Image 1 (cartoon, rainbow, N blue to C red):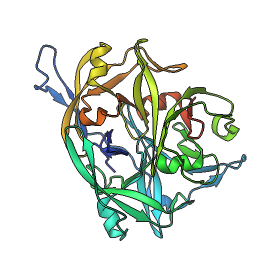
Image 2 (image 1 turned 180 degrees about the horizontal axis):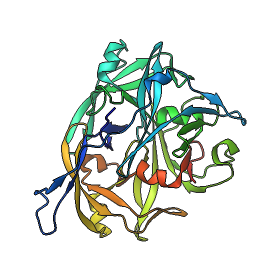
Image 3 (image 1 turned 60 degrees about the vertical axis):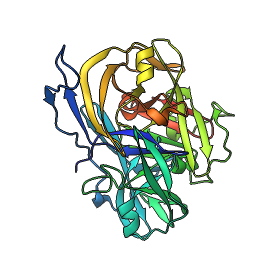
Image 4 (image 1 turned 60 degrees about the horizontal axis):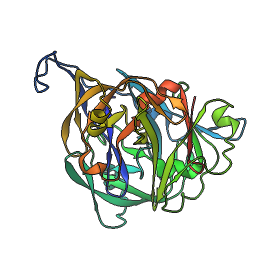
Length: 354
């Protein structure tokens, strides 16, 4: 099943990560960036198999809930998906997307399931464009057999979402945060939930961890890993995660921690200010409402608080209106996977990297 590479886009008031159709474009030295000399085929990511049905959850010896996670790696790009059932319908593959502040369902699927509208449409901003999204109400639904509380979802028509062989939605931090802490194990292909689903995170003020006593259960960290502070921003129906990223010891940059982004991306202003070394490579990417060419640059030495990241190629683009909130980049699954696993502790405002 094909599924285009992706980069996260940001909505007004919420964060929406959207599927992108991407090809890699190489340019020869001395040529204009508008003159491609080689175009690679579009990436193809695997999705959670429908044969798994609506079950799959197991209970660990420590009492945590663990569900299958499909991890797909193509040419250094990394994407993850899980199966979601809505009522008695499904399973539907959803992208596991910490960068999505509010979980999103394909508009066509929402219509087929007769999910009722729950308020007026909203406008969201993409790279040089805007789109509209409709809040809808979902009743009983589940994640691989783990019951989820009824809530509002964002219904939208997004490129590379909703078609044959494509994901049907995005499972975001609004859901994951209600489990307190979660572990994404890229090597084992599992998502572990620390406990049962609780209430949504409350309060609208951002906080940066560690907050209080972390005390993550051994079922999530096994006593290993490096703890990194996160900035958690809870809002009604939405949650976002941010981390301070430094390039070559420079100024701290506000990056979204986004498992829904298969490639890490820096704003053009950051790449320029930090003199990130350019390459002759670029990627053609279709956002939620535009098609752009994203040059690739060398990250060079970069880090998050207390931890050196792995040098790699990252995308560079002008975030435009979506940078108004101070967002300067995306820390994607391509980097997170290099650590084998990552734990997000939403209440304590930390992540732990293996």
